[in-house]
Image 1 (cartoon, rainbow over the protein chains, first blue to last red):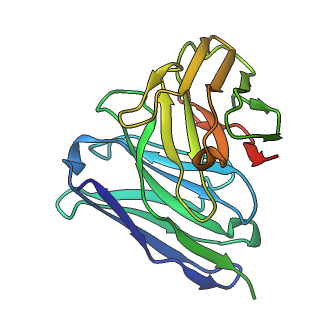
Image 2 (cartoon, chains in turn blue, orange):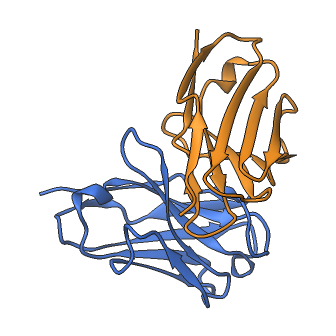
Length: 121
Length: 107
């Protein structure tokens, strides 16, 4: 079935780095744009980053621009989020999400289960 | 960035009630609006996209309407499994933005 599985979360000190992965299965990964969305404990959803199906276009939230990098490996059906210079306010559950259709603007129809990132000394 | 404002932020209702949640965009977004349901400890689930199109497998008691800046999500007859938090999201432009959420609780 269509599935996204995140991994790579954990506890990291402020200023540290972490790389999240999102393994896709059950659909043609290389045909869809992908997003990262996060949710701080007890808070709402915050969009983080987007990458086009072929990796040619990327967008970031202002809160992570210059610190986070989204990438993908279509040969491995995997999405990544490289997170550098981490701050306490980056503490959240990080979800990867798939765009519903292969067009320019779509809702997110499939979400992973999330991976927790805690930034603390 | 487009600001999405939901109301109310929380709401108490009973099984069988009809409930409406509103979402207002700070600028026009045509019909590029989605609604998601999230239960504690779970990922969000897409309910409605393009403002009024029901996602496959979502019960017909859920409906959406609106365009431009004002949108609504209506649950026609609340079931026990509907008590959750609901978010609207615009996908008209980047950055994608979500409303702050509406927590629907049992009265």
